[in-house]
Image (cartoon, rainbow, N blue to C red; front, side, top):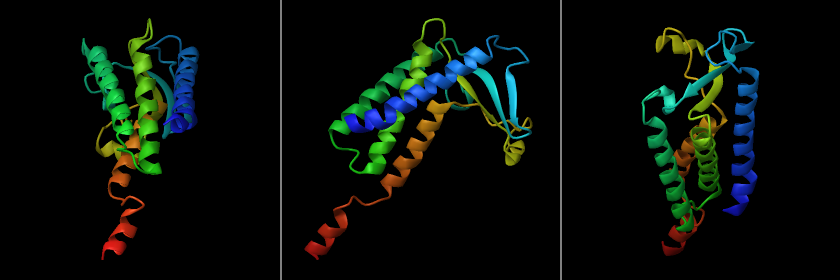
Length: 176
């Protein structure tokens, strides 16, 4: 666990917090029309968005959202730690996923509890061409490095759920 924590979780947490700090420095006045940098015209922008809710801005602005999602984050971290100790992440893929989850949870939890913050800073704004079919503005909900870690972790966990553990093929051949 320590190796994955040091090699993945800590650097990605640091990258998440550093990029959010850069956005807050670059866009000091939240809500200003100048809180926008077009990187790839019509496709990718840097923005400053405050999110007290969860993915896709659900429950954003809800009075107790930070408390609820902060508690969920702490419960998730506790669960991941207990599952790790019980060997629930047997292969490199699932261990990598767990380390990414911890990084993402810590990143967004830190935003929620920082004094004077109380919101998650999202700043990556994409306008994929197909998204106009879902949302007329064409903007995919803004996200950050921590959110990316959580999404990649979810994909890796799904992938690892469909893979056999390393020794399972050998055991089947030996018993047949």
